[in-house]
Length: 301
Image (cartoon, rainbow, N blue to C red):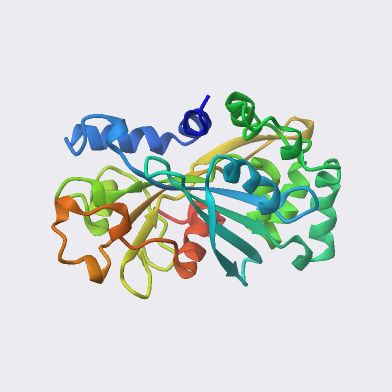
């Protein structure tokens, strides 16, 4: 089976589980179709998907990226997030039908000893890189791997302790490699919906709550990359000892990539992906991360 076919199987597995965990996905798609913006879900272009990881032995970016490099992705720029203690890279896809990928990693060694001890008490169960044991040509196995537990179910007490210091750490300790978000490319939608301020207004008219950290629209300094996102869905999580607690799950992002100045002369209908603003923007991403933070999910509506 070709790499492209296998990658499609993996992406479908990711999106199936993600859509089940994030009801906003189906609601947004239903609303877009109802407004005749699209006639079929396959008309939506996925700008990028994102994963969160722990920077510990045998895991992190160095492990997870092996899967996508195998399928032809190419690692691009590095981004650092000092206040959140994160590193990240984005990955360009092997062809335009596939989304970009953004993988971030928590700098665990920058946390307090107490937080590190909690994290290591779970991740020490992993004594070798789990990706190295995968047959990366078995797309079904890869899809299953991205949804399977990497360590035992955390305790509610330790989850809440991590939440106090690093909301990112708490999210990963429970959610592991679950898809953090996928991203609708609004610039490919029809007129009236293909600018982010218009699309945000449509979302809010239909009851979608948007992340307002740094403003509802996060804009790159060059003005060519605009991003917004929903506030993460609440998940009723089952912790060790059958304890339950509502936590942040995943969310949906929206991106508008504008045409690069040197390609402004190309008619809109003839513009291709390479004519648009590429890559990511650290300041935008920094605020998008907060879609899963309690300051967003608990704020008054």
